[in-house]
Length: 170
Image (cartoon, rainbow, N blue to C red; front, side, top):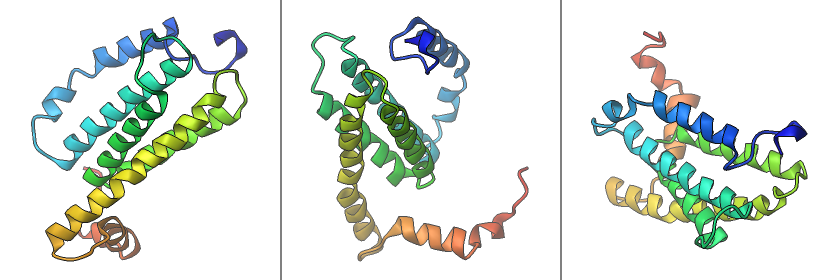
């Protein structure tokens, strides 16, 4: 209910108009996605995750007819977010922020938001389900068990090796 002071719910006219504005201003995305890169691949998975999550929220609010299983959609959304993470580790900040924001809103006790907490558990399960795949691909690529997200964090954050390439924004 927009009059309650909270954010607009899925499918409301206000949210749909914001969606149209965002789609209209994202004209540059195809130009960015023509180059094969981890950023582009991760963006594709994040958009798939957000699209699936939108279906989760609209099915939770009862605004769709015959929709796939609520839990299945949430798990698929989480799996897409997990694949975005394995494509580019920095997306962990986005995925964690998204998940925590939805959890805080769901714990606020608004009507219809309580069902989202179950979906968030399925989302987390979907993210975790990508762990064996990511580890298997890393083991194949590195020739043995490698925790590449941890290695990336250790080298670039703890040992500050990313600064070798410069710290200036331009």
